[in-house]
Length: 121
Image (cartoon, rainbow, N blue to C red):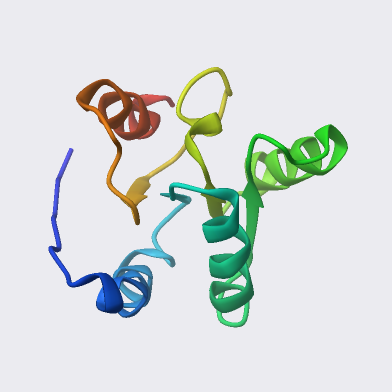
């Protein structure tokens, strides 16, 4: 497992995300963790112009959440799923090669659960 870190100013986070996605999106499935559902919608609007992506957050309709998760699971190659911490625990999402913390988690335990997504094969 490799860990790379980018420390950016808040106004440069989105540019840094695109830089990272340009490097890894063709190499496997990516989960991008954000802090709120508004960030999910914001990044889907931006990232979706360049990459195939979906999102999941807690207050999302269960059918929409299930559809996004199923699409991500079925995708054999590259896919990007933008999620809140609802996906850090309790969701079975196999074969994730990359985890990106767009917003840093509020505690160490959440960081471990988020990052542990890449350990599930």
